[in-house]
Length: 371
Image (cartoon, rainbow, N blue to C red):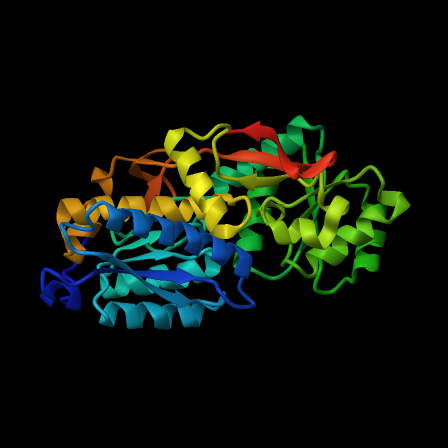
């Protein structure tokens, strides 16, 4: 149930003042800075286009950006600050554990939060009307990834992992789905094993696929290089369901060794006219091909601008209107619904793919499975 929030400062500004959206973005280490840069590019491009077409009932839309640096406490503090500044809504965040902290604080303060790019199923402890999410839940995407593994003949899977709620949730999803089809999952602790020791364990295990559920660049880069150079592991598939190979830093760090590493991304097989136009604009802004995260940023603002134009800046009215959203995003028609086991309003579902970088040309992507 919605409870009345404290009045936002935006509600007392003049008609000529800006309508503010607070943006939570990882822009410094240990946050994934490249993902944050792409997310912010999408947010900023869409805000500029909203303002070029009249803003929000004649008022400019303003993005108030705060760097979360992948720190849950920093994100919660940023939500407090942005709520005090009178933002009409919150947007953004890439890291799931950080988004969870932001969602909890937004729920407590009564500020609508549209999560742009974090997938952890349990984004909130209890169901809430204050939070909605664009990317698919982790369970949805990672089951697609497990189906890809099964379809490619992999039933004995090893995962190199580090302590994290996100990685632990991913392992549980994979294990449940694979075990139902005769598959197994062996965990290798990348915090306790150096890459050479991890290769020894992997060779002894007999797994046909190794999934990287670890941080980037390290230890992911060192593990990939060690596995690629170990003749005992010549036939093993390396996978990265969380999407690390999507970004240019992966290719720059690993070169040819970073090809043929399947990962999840949330794009359709072909972009429509809006997606193609936005993709070209994002490429120009970023100086490189935009990742799916940049499209998520753009779509976030499309949704929020539509709500603001239809319902004004009252926070409670915005939060009550998630089920009324029906807007055309870069990757399809966006609508929100309640999904069993997920406590936030969810787009069910954005397009999802398992892709990899083509060994014949690592700047090209091959679509291996869609869902």
